[in-house]
Image 1 (cartoon, rainbow, N blue to C red):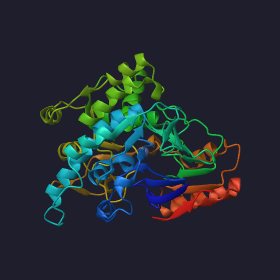
Image 2: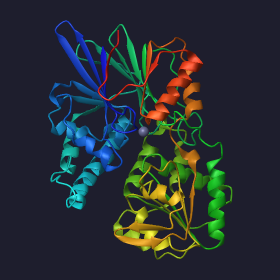
Image 3: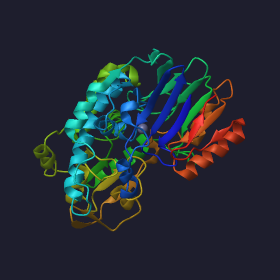
Image 4: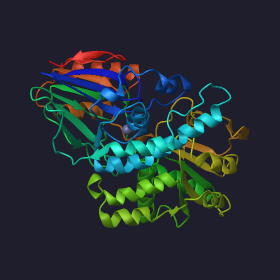
Length: 452
Ligand SMILES: [Zn+2]
């Protein structure tokens, strides 16, 4: 087997790993993850670079989880000629039906809004391209081996980063190669603890938090205090969230706070059509998380779901106090920015970000204390209080990554550190070398390794 790193190295987006296996006349090629490069223009433009591989020659794609930085390039890959099968878990397919179509919408929108500054006239892919790509998906059960070509065996093992996430284990009969995908956390509020693996010859390991630790604070307690203060002065709380995972975790926290009597009976709106659909999937895929059926429905019933634009606009006329949960998680899309326009300039109100805010996003500017913010060409003074609760993250920090690695009973031949900024990947490399004495490498873009 041979592995080539086509993305998700020295950065956190664009995950794409090519596995080639030659045996006799057979030459099998599979891609693990097919993610979009996301972020500032410098990063996103890489989605347009010539691919170093011909998609029509790839036999199959195997997906670790539905996040767009792991799946968002699939419609473009199909558009360029890929015709193989796309293997993933059942919940990942259900999520991709929502996320890829939404991504097609964003790609179409990006061309319209940026047309003036770029010569890009065609979207990377359209909604129709995204819908077409879904035909190639083939969901498989966890822990059930499938064979690609005649000799590459692939198994998906549930990994608990998000709904539908899995480790990918590939074997050619002699060696095994395991992908961690994004590694979840042992004590997540709603997701189960990632299972421990015992053996692999080669490991591809993520490093988003390779040089950082999450705060050990209780997010429910933190959230409760911030809401109480705001409600006491009749303010509005806006919580920007991502649709997959974070929105459901925030609803769970609010449910707990209501049960404990910490927050009173004030209106709570889930103002994100995508988050509403993902929330419904949570109750369908019971085995994927810790919430029992009875509780699942109760938790998600605490919010009023607003689907249409008119319903969303009507929220701004509701008598405060109230809580608005809206996309996106970094305030750079979705409906949250529209509520900012109405509420951000009043000191009674509060915005609570639930997790990491990337450089260049409105969320980052706000948590760093920006005095004004530009939304749709207009500036708004920031008088509302702004907070961030870091402990909501769905990624293991370096203590949690090292603890997960400690369950391996034999030493992998090599560990490849991916999915992290360079400093983070390097830092994790040193930590793994120091603690376990393993052979660890931080691969470069397009670098290949023989796995013998
Ligand atoms: Zn992820």
